[in-house]
Length: 363
Image (cartoon, rainbow, N blue to C red; front, side, top):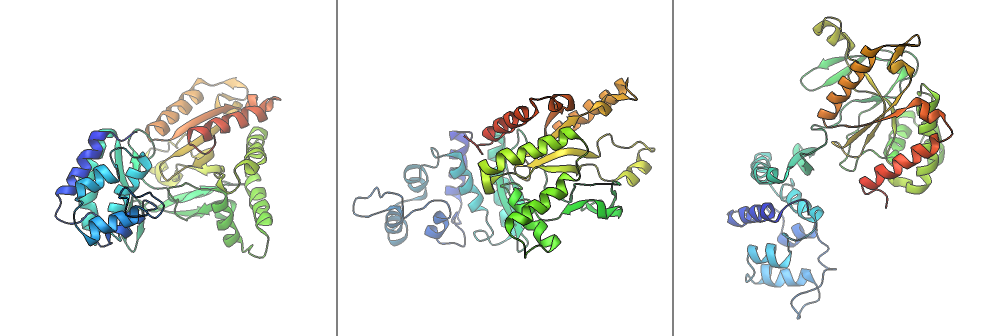
């Protein structure tokens, strides 16, 4: 378990001492049913058939099980899998449970004061009717904040982008907007899947009369057209040829030519004309709002000009890499030369197999 026994116990003890019920506006059984399939769980009271009937008898009809017995003995919240424990905490903060955003914030702060000892935190990932939805995330890695304004797949002249509102991070493309794609939809905590991109693309391009396969091919061709080099094309093509049949609808989207630093106009003014080294990433994968993978394919332009080695280019590149990693991104580099060789496909498939195993997408 990643969440320790002591942290779990301290949170449960905090809930036990509160005057208000942890299940808030929901009934107890409705609350617990969002986390466990109570009807399929075996009864520990031999006169009943399942956990639902147990809890109804001892916590609703009668009152002979207190919170301590329910949490520690019956539900075993100090021993269960992390996913179950975290889902319990997230449900405690759900808008259907707590009546106001202020109550949610107070409860989240109390949980976080304890969770941070194990390097976890409850963060807002979305909203329902203006109230936040919380998700437990790790403080050891990942990017804080949510993805917004995903600008990608530029072909031809690159887009020129400025901030319309620097506080809320609203942007405006003032030139060459027709050359790039912009994904405005929120990224779920399960990440951005290939099927999500297809659904968005079908709506954007009004392709609803086409079959899903035809929609997929249409999007694939548009993304492929944005790729600058043969190594990028090989990696992109190999990814879909190998992993689409393997993972189907669970395939994470491999997003090409993604803009990370947007604002050449503003930054030219603020930083005496010095532009950011990395305005664009070769590929981005979003396994969640916070779990972001950057793939870079290095060609000769990364370390030379006119076939002459330029140490300053390499220095700028690795300095930007450090910034990305410190911001919480995972960064993996491929040499363009290695993908040119006959082993390029194997290098690509081996890498993604290992990446997916780490994220429990593949066995």
